[in-house]
Image 1 (cartoon, one colour):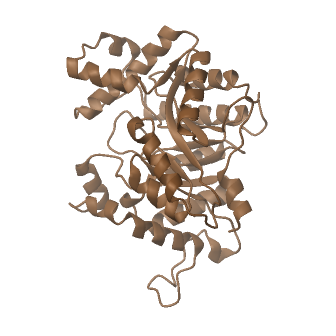
Image 2 (cartoon, rainbow, N blue to C red):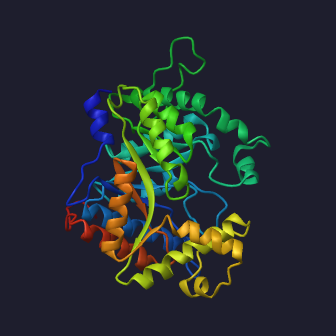
Image 3 (cartoon, rainbow, N blue to C red):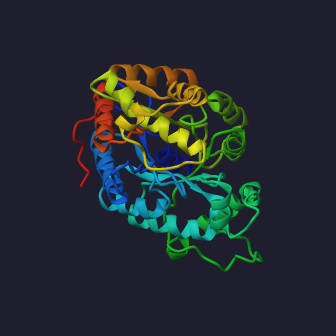
Length: 364
């Protein structure tokens, strides 16, 4: 594809007073007392709100065997979101490629591109998005590390399927991912590489692909990874210059204390996940009453230091400072809280703080 087509599909435009485009990362979280149906309905509401206010993308992340997360099947969720939106870009943040056959991903995202032409992103990660046992169950192997090691080869195979351009003589030369180019000229979703360390940063740079870094759970590696991406970058048919977004955990509230109450639910959820006790996102009252051990308290303090939270003005200042420090080309905001209303209100307040558009046409 030509530079202009791919560039336009990748690069966003800053709206209002935002320093860079703002987007949404949706973990489809399930709170205590809620159901997966509730969480998926909230995802639709967030996507519609984001579209109406001028957020650039809405991505869904693949996770498995986590009771507090309902996003095990990004392609299914994205198809549902496509039916309820008209303009906002939709994508995976990401699909964990080692969990799947490349042909299957090409078929799924070719289908999504046919459903929502010109607004689908294919973000790919090399981690399993779960624990080792679940990864083995997904891949039907007791050696899940093999998939991550083979990531560059899997990526190359997936790209060939998306472009329908295996060379003559290749075993897959007569296999076509459909929907896809074999059915006629068509666009295809731009590929993004996702990461929380240097491997995907370097690979994205070498291949000239856009890069998304998971600052929201690997903050200490953000600047080194982005520096490595930019240093490794080689212009390609996809991009003539680096383009990097970072995932940011941020929650704005009308009251600073309420913001703290809400983000503590996510912190407790992470404590439980890290100690082998994953569950639904606890309520603010449950999180406030929980007696953290000294080690857990240390983890929570460290975790919350990288969650931008408070009033809308405080969150705006925090996001501005982070963008300046990292030089990120786009900020992808994830609002982790027990309450659906708190998450929706947060995106509204952030949109207001940056004077984003009011009620853009498009959301159904």
